[in-house]
Length: 170
Image (cartoon, rainbow, N blue to C red; front, side, top):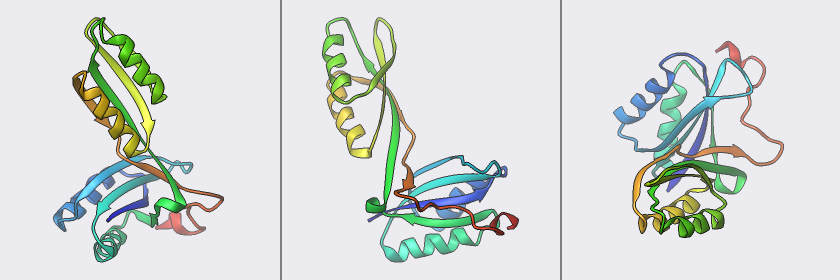
């Protein structure tokens, strides 16, 4: 079972390395990890996807909460959150295959962000299944290179994984 965690941390050098190091030392498999700025300048939000049962989730959360720079951890369930990935995919695109590739890009509401005589770079934002489906179709044309961000996620509705007064003093 996959678990998505939103981890708010103090924006300090080495925090991401300490978190990933801690999880790998404990032999927890990180499927995806993405970090970025938040609405608070001193806080970074790290979205981590881990594989395991509820016991693994409990252990991951306990281990992360021991780190000094971790302010708050919350599990984001699929029904209570929205998530997206970004993918950049470079595909072979000779003159004969371009019209077909353009059709595929339009169907997936993706964007062509670079093109030359031999290749095309496609940008797609969506859930994991959408990106996987596009990759299956593009494999027929020859994927030259690809990069994916990993999942980022926010809770639905007015609730948020936010700091309460006093938490910044950690």
